[in-house]
Image (cartoon, rainbow, N blue to C red; front, side, top):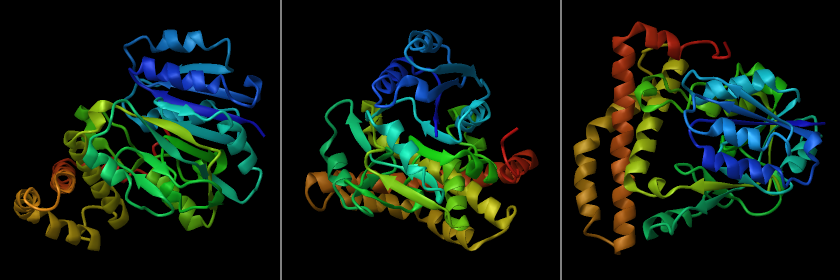
Length: 333
């Protein structure tokens, strides 16, 4: 069983080079897996980087210039020659036995999805409030979805599909096709209104279909945490985008702009923004300085989430074409 490693990228040639370099050090020989770099509209030297690694990897370079991470992922899906699809972000560095471990894990025919640890590769020393948050227990270890970092320790065990994240997301081709591919994700700022819920949709399909998702600690990667992502601004932006994604999901679940339980909760939550601002001020006067700052970051992110949710609702209400986009059966074409 071979594998196709699919790496969508856009204007991040330098980090892409480090990612590809890690793939040259795999325990499997280069001819045992293919690498597809899908250029999602780069204007930097991404083509030069891919050409540099064309001799040491079984590498294909393709362009999918239309905006959206899902566009690059689906182009990789179309071009992949293998039944095992390993989707990765361009800013990861893979452990040496990453590909071999994923391929072996999929030898069990009941396994549909495989993930591992996404260890943080901090570009600079993280602020204390961030490290305080990162150390808090989550699920089987620790996890911080705003940075796509996760550490569930050592071992092989069944996992909730929601903890297999896009930077290290391996799936059987047939399962992905049955799910109708990925939903919109990774939209540039000017296209945020078209954002969806990305691989979350696929993970939900895996969960509801009874397929198994497996965590294997040997299928791990290191995920770059750039300096500009270790800020309150980044957490606000991620929360705003998550608000858009959750509005999109709610619309699909209710079949349109109907009032659902989820929407009722959001409508109750969003008017609390002034109260949340008051709580931020209150948080600045309690606990130690690290706890105060973390509380302020989390509360400002909650406000941003509400704004994102409301923004998407307004945009969909005003534009029938956007509602039609949100309700598309799939985005493979």
